[in-house]
Amino acid sequence: DGSLRDLPGAQGFRIGTAVDPNRLNNEADYRNTTIEQFNSITAENVMKWETIQPSRGQFNWSGADQVVNFAQANDQIVYGHTMIWHSQLPSWVRDGGMSATQLRTVMQEHIAALGGRYRGEIYAWDVVNEAFNEDGTFRDSVFYRTLGESYIADALRWADQADPNARLYINDYNVEGINAKSDGLYNLARRLLQQGVPLDGIGMQAHLIGGQVPSTMQQNIQRFADLGLEVTITELDIRVPTPASNASIQQQGNDYRAVMNACLNVSACTGVTVWGVTDRYSWVPDTFPGQGAALPIDENYNAKPAYWAMYEALGGE
Ligand code: G3I
Image (cartoon, rainbow, N blue to C red; front, side):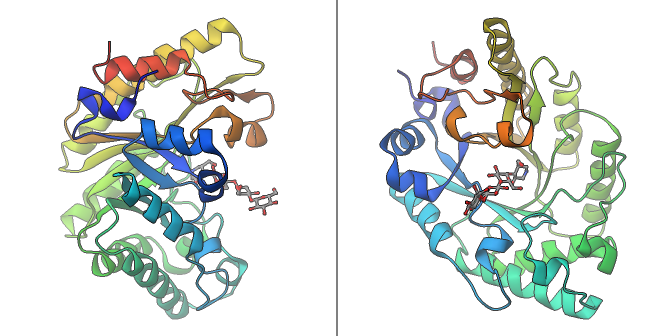
């Protein structure tokens, strides 16, 4: 078997996965696959607000510390996920009925604590996650409702104070192709840059459907690159109907190849992270019953055509 991280195309390129520290501790196949294949890791859940600060001023760093320590022990970089998000947000923030002043204070405290704890150790932070609706307007989160669009610029500035060396990203899904949502994100990015807000990158999650990789993906990545931004594919998976047919798994391989090439063809696109180590633990079947098998490595840790598509895209033979 091969190793993605050892391939020529993975030198200076981040090839990542999303991890759960309990599985890293308890399951050898999971741990070894993470070490052997990837040079970057993202915490799938344990850096989210509900875990880090479940009640005000009470911080729980154990899972996040484990992820960072694991990465450092295995010569991997850490992609930080996420500071400000409407989901997995504890109710004391979500339903707290805070004034604008109170909410800003709480946001700044959270960002300062999270960014500060790992200052200098995080490649990039998803500072703001999933701020948009499908039509390109802003999502009606507690942050937008209470503060308006300004919460995004403020979050980026606070993150910059907390960790000046981390690249600061805005991350979202369904923004891989050119569409109303990615137009909204593009226009926001342009406004922020014009205002001198410290925005460094765009994360495209890429939770995709087999056979439906957007044909404008490379063009879309390029237009963000042309603003001077870095782009990362942050949460790649490509779901198919389950039990998966041979044909759908072959098609999925071609889809992974298309995503890899869309990124690799744009020099500002510096990494691809797949959202999980193995189909065994993917979030997809829980959320989309009857769909799954979305990752390059199957439930028994065998490489699928999607894996070999990534392998070849990174220069393996
Ligand atoms: O930790 C509890 C556990 O104690 C409990 O027994 C169990 C029973 O349901 O739930 C566990 O929590 C689950 C958590 O994952 C940890 O496994 C939650 O129910 C479950 O909702 C949660 O799902 C995560 C999801 O975000 C939540 O929004 C997925 O693992 C994670 O892959 C997914 O990741 C998101 C990204 O952060 C943002 N982009 C979309 C992506 C996919 O939804």
